[in-house]
Length: 383
Image (tube, rainbow, N blue to C red; front, side, top):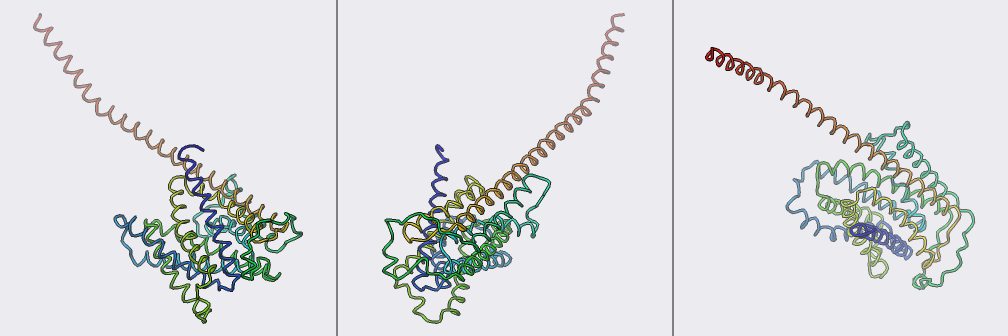
């Protein structure tokens, strides 16, 4: 990587580090007793405050008109991408571990592919290599998720970390305090979270066609989600002490999730997509799992099981299979479009040549006739 290629690479690595920090800090905040619904509400509030300036300054001259149809689509995005996705995710994270949460996030492309086929935004052509790769990758992803969720096996002996974070002991939390039943409930909610996220992708694709102002739409989405998540949180958590941010970890996790986990990550990901495309940004997703697994083992003494490792590996293989199939399909589509443009251009050139021949023909006949007449007059004068 040289020149401009190194900057998007470093940016996407930083984005995954931001997400890793959000997963770990959120897990620690919930281990102190913070309700996940309260954490989601604070995340949306801080995200709205962080993204709003970008929406105002960067799109104030290019912002399209906000119609009722656009507002309704943004409302649906807030219900799927913010409320359903994040509420289910944080509930699943509370009842699971940060490593499992990141691992199950990687089934998103497979779930999105299935829903896109149902909504006729994608095709599953089993006669082409790209279609087979997407279908096989989806099956492998789901299989890996099932294995990770319902089978643990033996503990992988990685030894003891010498840099254990003593703050965990001081606040009385334990990353391995979840019960066995929670290891089933947690992954279930995490998978429901990916379904909500995938639905957001489907709706967002339609919204982008009608309203090309991503920062404004994100600001409105986070603002609506703040109201929705706040209402849900107040309904579940009546005690105002549960909303207190006096605890340093709760305040840090809320600010981190809203500013770095939403505003900064969205901005940097959008920047990378504009320069390298969505496929480039997608391949960095498994890096999140690696970072979280290492940090959780080093700082939180989180145990790594055989089922978690094998399931995560299957999910990553399935992810890259889906991405490979999608990339090959996009290249085939671009080649088809180029061929159509080339054929259309050649047909237009041939049509113009025929038209020119027809236009020139009467002129040539007339010129030939006039030439014969001049020669005959000269011959008669000579005689």
